Length: 321
Ligand code: ADP
Ligand code: MG
Image: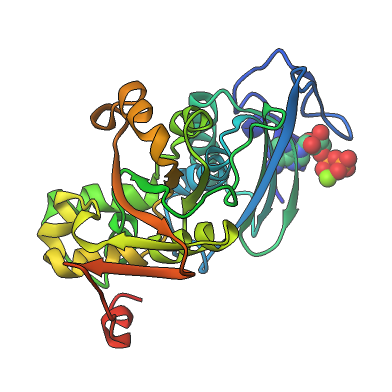
């Protein structure tokens, strides 16, 4: 690389995230040192983005930097953990300064928003691939998992689903839309908002939680199966954004909300006796979440419309894959 690896790290990644008092030793040594607060457990997640697989070639570098951290923030949110420290393994075809500047801006802005320090990483040459490892913490024994829900628990979803999948199709020019809807939906794919504050609050109310990265129906099914129950989603209750409905019409918007990926919303279960307290302490209009169904004893995840289980034709799905 024209730019030495040392100069690249100094210029773009030292000071890229937040500064934290609990980082005893950050970028520059063989490893980083951090202090986990007393009484807390370390929570760790890692996700890799590969060009052409997880984002289209020539995506804006700010978006790639943002998403590389956002997908991990979403995982920690789903655990009810507070994110704190990140490591970045970056594989680049060449050290292009404009690209690096954009990437570091996208990653750094989101890191500072969530008070995440970039404490280390690794830089190598090769096809574009980004791994971020995110570390955080939560009070010992209080972490939210996928596995704590029971039949009868109410199922909720933050935000809206299906937007990012539509945004990706717009980005790939597989769909067209009026400028306004197009801009908003593309933002939902390029710059997703991980629900970190909500996740931390949910430790007090939820029995189980998962982040929706691969499609709501499948991910709700994963939560249910980890909890040894099934999930019943109400077709008419699925929250949809206005731009998505305008673009696709209501039926196709609902299908995409069930199957489209990359939304990074939280799907969570709340025991019936906690629901009134949840509504009182985290008002749904303010925290932006919607009741979308319930957990039941019969395994699997189904969608119910007007009292009957819906059958999805395979072609109905494939239209959007
Ligand atoms: P080593 O030879 O010990 O692997 P490196 O030269 O790879 O060291 O890295 C030097 C320092 O810079 C280390 O502290 C490492 O964590 C940090 N680092 C390397 N690449 C990155 C990166 N992309 N982002 C943040 N820190 C990095
Ligand atoms: Mg190294």
